[in-house]
Image (cartoon, rainbow, N blue to C red; front, top):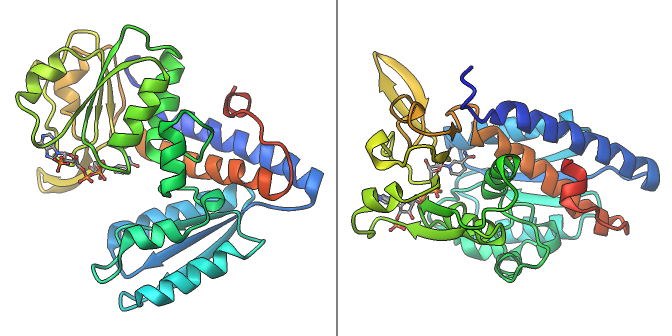
Length: 298
Ligand code: NDP
């Protein structure tokens, strides 16, 4: 493996080990085990795979996994009732509603119904507001995973220019808040950005979260830059179905200083951070002081 690769698979497995250790200490102290409830609506094949992985990894770290698989036809009110039930269930410390939800359901309404203290996806408006105010909060899993990978390289990004491609609530926007916390100078790009290529050429760090296969090429990046590729795109190449990121990995490898591969980069970090968030959410619910994230990760 090239020494330029940021090995998300390895780092995520280390995080899961730490979550398991802290979870077991919490159980010894309180007699309680953190529980993560996952709600899956419909038959979206990608969502089913994500949920299956999440459940497996939840059980592996010794947490309780509570699953609710609902028909595509479930009504908004039925979903709200389920969220209310999980909000009030003392065996559930974290609630994750797998997106996307069917079109007849207002996703924002469902996500905002989850109690902020059980919102392990970090999508509730309270948690979003806290993140942007620099207060302790549950942070969306994918950008949290990216920030942990970046902190492995450098904890302080003073004087560094970070460019994020994508402004979604799930990745791009929270990523910007986390990079600002690390003192980076942050530029957020999106589909209306003019001359994206030259913006990227000035970046010391690029976080690509677009959903366009291999969009970022070597002639877009600065020599020695750090590339975090969030994209997960299923494409067909040489009659084989493969996963590629939003960055042209082979093309950029020689020019960048560090890069996350796809698969094996950001993807596994997302699940590890979901478990980390479930652990963090459990302390106050079990009336215990919450340790610093850095003390769990060190
Ligand atoms: P969204 O579709 O919600 O957002 C995509 C963003 O990219 C939007 O802000 C959009 O701009 C921008 N964009 C689209 N086209 C261009 C373009 N040509 N130039 C510049 N910007 C553009 O996607 P997500 O944020 O949810 O996901 C992004 C990628 O990350 C996907 O590949 C997804 O599969 C992957 N992903 C991976 C995860 C993981 O665990 N590794 C978790 C979540 C997502 P605008 O706002 O103007 O439309």
